[in-house]
Length: 457
Image (cartoon, rainbow, N blue to C red):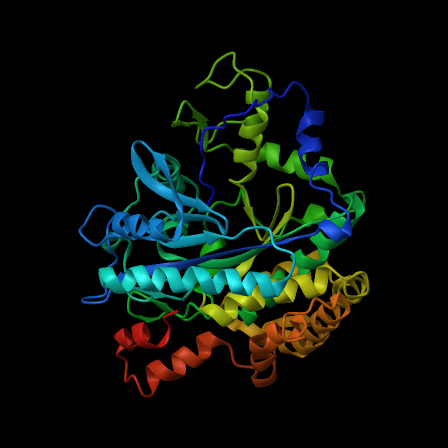
């Protein structure tokens, strides 16, 4: 989740609804300036007893952040405590229970993305080795209850932790017990945004299935392949889901702005502190009628903050975020942006991907989203087919899109190699969650502690 800092520059007050819409239009870029931003989270654990370290404890999360500064990362403070790091490779931040996230820099190609990921993982492993910490690449804590987990000292999390139980039964699990991989991609125009949004939203359940990696809860199988994805179905219906309006005629910036205005607020950030505005209306804020800041109108940064508190399967800010995948180790971190760049950054591939999904009804799209967390690639897609039946076709389209980009590394290789993990999943029909379940029921003999050796970064 976003890490807010005070801006040294001017932050214009929003005087009209047009400014809200303009925030999306400002994201438009010519194709030669389209970039790739990749975000990935990992669980941190003590190698001795596998507990999740607190912020303050010796060798804990604070020590981990401090240790990373030796690589040139600059501390970001909140309330006098380091809660994030900034540097040339983006931002390192903390999720609510100490999950460590890299929000990578906007990069030109996947070779750079994977090099950035490799640098980050080498750095955290180096510091982790000194502190006795390990890192786990899964979508869900396999053996930790909510009560087992610490809370990080970030103001927005305190507000969210209070609010989540009011609107869903699994929101606290989302905050405390899950990890994801995301990729952020650009668009060239409103029409380009709309097509990319529709394609990626329709195919987000495929990404969920391909990256399914959260089959355990509280130390035993949970009956799902992506329990992380299931958690989102009962987190907060006002800010999650498949956004049916995206597929309606005329969808564009204005319609998404209206949706975001109807998402209840969480907070307002002022003078280094988060003010609790949970459940209040941004429309009232626009009218100067927000009860916690009477007479005050929002700034453009407030709108940016608010956009970050909507959690649909695909989210728009001044770029599009792909949000369907479970967390995982290095090869999966590289594979997620490879899939979406291949599908969305080449016009022929984008058109071909739209041909795959354009005839699906909203009911079929929702049914697919609902069934994927449990069934994975066996989820039905209509016409008597299963998701596995289109997986290879979609990955082949992504491969063609990456080949057409022809972005080569120093050895002359294009970007298609980063799809190899997904091609293996599609060919075998077996997700990583199912492989873990095979281990659990087989060689591990029900000893889930074995996951710490097998699923590290």
